[in-house]
Amino acid sequence: MSVQTYSLVNYFDVWTDEEGGWQVNNSQVEFRDLVILDDATDKDILKYLKQIGFLKTDDMRRLVVEDLGDLIEIYQRKGMMPICGLRPNSL
Image (cartoon, rainbow, N blue to C red; front, side):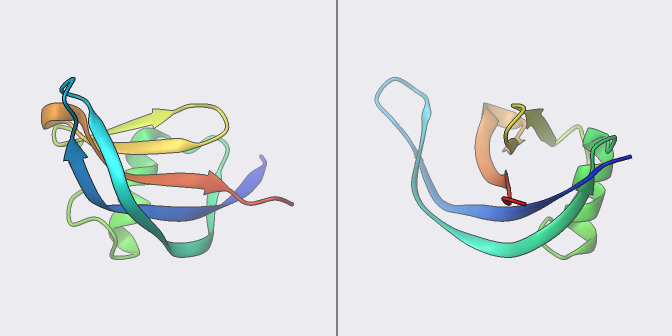
């Protein structure tokens, strides 16, 4: 089992654009060196983010985890508004 460390980027200023999509206007790194196992499920990731105090809920009916291979994005399910991203740290 392999372990990867991530930085959590909080998208704290998000707004809709003219096409009905989302634009992240401002963000900041909230946590560095978060350890996430390669076999972590979407639920595991949400649970972890709740445990460290970043998310208020880990309810998968409200949140979506999208693993894009080189990064992980978390969205609010209603409207798919981006909340944060997990960026892998270089080893």
